[in-house]
Structures are given as structure tokens and as C-alpha cells.
Image (cartoon, rainbow, N blue to C red; front, side, top):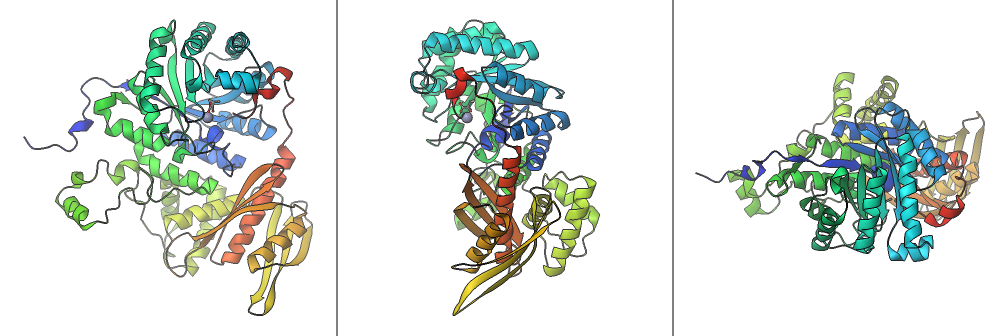
Length: 534
Ligand code: KIV
Ligand code: ZN
């Protein structure tokens, strides 16, 4: 009998179901520079539904009117997965969460409170007893609205295990159907985290009445390893994000955990409902929407994940794929991604490619994108997937925020001070012209846009790269600016990189304007005012 390279995929016992809880739109979106517009969130939520995740955490409805609106829209429009909203253990948050979630086919309220000694002492200033009381009352309140209630013990990995077991027993008795054990600061090591889950499995009363979940951050690069260790100890829900985006170093990466479970089913004996061929398109979509690019060497979805450069590897691969490949590119949806369109491609081919990339467009959006595609195809011989993503985002971006760029003229060259003239159109129908100088043409364009919109920002980061290869490639500019204590990201695409930069800067400003318009801070609940960011 020869070596069967796929033998390790055969699971003899029926695999238990591992619930995939995606928090790209909540924990992921919370990361600096990852904020998304409502349309972008809806697009990502639809892609997550197509991917086959079980639960989408769509946001934190009490955090702002904008968050409320996006959770409600997703709850109304996205079918398939359970839609979840985060809430602190207080009446206001829970009511707000339910108001946002109630249109969903299947909804979950996710309540949380920190349990660790550090958080109790310095953040909450609450005793153990008070934390326990609030945890229970939060779950009870949520159960008054919804049968499906998750409780998270924030910073569980640094909580005294006996106290954690007491909290988990109490919230299960109060009706929590899922109990989440977060490693909020990414501090655990895999064998320690596995032991904690085993401890809870043996010391919590009625532990089998709830699904034990884990939520690992990646501060020490161990989020996926810790999550897998927890699964080996009996956790049956993993909280994760596409591309691992999230607070600080991010969260457990969805594509890595799903492919680890699938590839090593012999060791884990669990399975997910994820359509793994949607992993790559979904990763591309989230990268394009957030502007946070996936490193080339990123496991599973990086551009080099399946590239074999060394001669000895290529030789092995030619003999048999399994010599150096434990997964196939087509398993994660990379197979057909290199198709190229050109100016003779029709609307049908364009639509097929857009769908394959996970970009769900309605007819009007498709019309706009197709016109932009034809214009680009006239200038560029070959239109690649990355060009299509850029087109879709550019035509989409045109919908959000009050300002549009009508024209931009730049003067620069040796011996002259770079300057820019811009004309912007406001959604109220008025137009504004402004001129400014700068150290370079891009700085001049930014300054002129600031003057025209009246929005002052601090430039935090500016990145420019070519979307594809070749002298006719589109440039993608990503601008990160700070305003109102938050970071806003803007992206612009054009074959002219100064114009791409101006568009990116204007998109960031549009997002600031939208945010100012939508942002009505939630009233503070006196007792939870110190609950802080999650
Ligand atoms: O990291 C964390 O603890 C969280 C909880 C709110 C689940 O995001
Ligand atoms: Zn988190």
C-alpha cells in the first residue's frame, strides 16, 4: 500500500460540529484603521453568509448610532447565519442590542463583563460578588428578549480559575446558551489554555447545557494555536476574524482555523460548515474594504501561500503535489483567481468574475462598475482581479460622504513650488474651489482638499502601491488620518497616482463627515461607565 497523501483527511468517527463565530465586523472593525461604511459592512456580511459561517457578530449597537444602524441593516438583510450584537451587562445596552437584532431570522445577544482581578480592580472597580451579580442579571435580561444568549467573561485567561468556574456555572443557570472564554490580551500559551478549558469542563455545573466558546487575541502570535488547543479540550465555538484583523495584533484568523481543522481532522475530529473555496475571495474582499493588506507569506490566503520557488520544491511538486503541499490552492478558492478580462469581455463575464471575487452587487451597482471596467479596459490591456476589486470599491465609495472630487490640477516640477487646485462638489449641490502649495504634489492636493472641506486632520500614514503589474497598472493609495480621536482610512484608485492619493484623502474626510453626522454617543450608564473599550 502506497502513501496516501490525503489519508490524514479521513475521519473515522462522525465529526462534531465546530461553530464558527465571525467577529470581523465587531472586533475586527474596532481595530485602528479598519472602520467600514455601512455599505461595506453589508457587503462583508453577505460574503460571510456565502462563506457559511454560523454566527456573524455584526457590531456593538449601543456604541453609536452608526453601529446600531449597521447591526439592524445586517439583521434585516442577511439570511443564513445567526446575527449577533454585543452588549455590556446593563439595561440600556441590552435593549439597544435587541432593538437592532429583532428583524433577524435568527438572533443572538452577546453580553460581557470582565472577570479578571486586574480588570475588576482597575477598570470596573467592582468586587467579585458584584461582577458575578451583574453577569447573571445581564444574561437574565438578555434572555427576556432572546432564547440565544452568549456570555463572555472578558479577560478570562487571566481570571482565577475557581472564580471563572463560579461565573460560568451561574450564567449557565441564568440561561446562557454559549459561554465564551476570551484570552483578551493574547497572554495564554496553548497547553495552559487547553488546561483552563479542561478545568471548566470538569468544574462547571451543567457545563454541557452551553456551548463553550473561545476568543483568542494574537498578541504573542498564538491565537490560532490557543484556539485549537481549546478545541482539543472540548470548546465547540471559535470566535475569529477574516485575515485575523482585530484589536492590536488581531484575533484568531478565520481562514487559518478553518483550514487547520479541515487539514488535521485526524487530530481534532470536528468539522465546520464553511465553504473553504470562499476563503480566498472573502479574504480579498476584507483586505480591499479595510485597506489592510494581507502579507504575501500569510498562511492560507497570502499570495505566496502556494508558491514554490526553490528548485528542489518545484522538482518535488512536479513528481507529486503532496510532497510540499498539504492543501491545494483550489481548496481555498485560489484556483481560478488569475483569470484576466479585457476590453472585449462582456457584462456576463464581468458579473461572473465579480461574483467569484465575493463582491455581491445589485443591478445598479453592477451597471456602474461595468462602465468603469470598460473605461479601464480601454486604457489597460488586461484587467486583473485586483483591478476589478478596485473598480467596485471606487464606484461604491462614490456613494458615501458629502464630498465629490470634480477636478484636480497639479503643478509640480524642478524649480517650482508644487501646488494644487481642486474643485469639490457637496451633496447639497454647492461647489468649492481651493488652491494650496505643499512640499510635494500630493501634500499640495491634501492641503487644498482640507481647505475646501474645512476638515482638518492629522496624517498618520500614506501608502501607495500598484494594484497589478505593468506600466499601465492602477495605483492604489491608502491614507490614514486622525480626527475626533479616531483613525479614518481612505482609499483611492487611479492610473494617475496623485489623483489616487487625492481620492483616498477625500474618502477619509468623507468618512469623518459621515461619522460626525451619525455619531450620537450612547448615554453612559453610571455603573458601567468604566466598562471601557472591548
Ligand atoms: O477580547 C475580548 O475579550 C472581547 C470580548 C468582548 C468577547 O472582545
Ligand atoms: Zn476581542
